[in-house]
Image 1: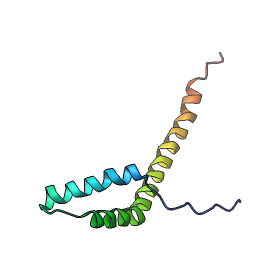
Image 2 (image 1 turned 90 degrees about the vertical axis):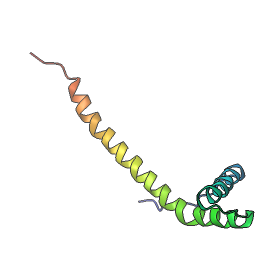
Image 3 (image 1 turned 90 degrees about the horizontal axis):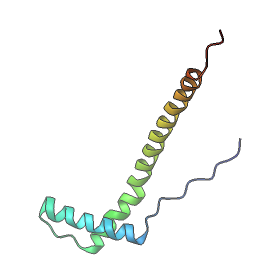
Image 4 (image 1 turned 120 degrees about the horizontal axis):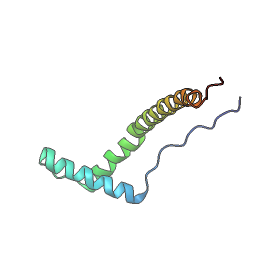
Length: 87
């Protein structure tokens, strides 16, 4: 079996980071009534990117594999449903 390269760390684009920083800022203001500075926003986003993103990514892969497996199971039954009677 071929060796698989380690998947690189998930990286967000600058535009995605900007949007998420705004979401973090709004969350703190709405939920906690606190202002949060840009440095704190960036630190939280970095934490999420390093620690949470791989977990969420792996869960999405597991969900996709489960869905794909179910579709493959359906292919077999769908295939035989196409058979015609040979009378």
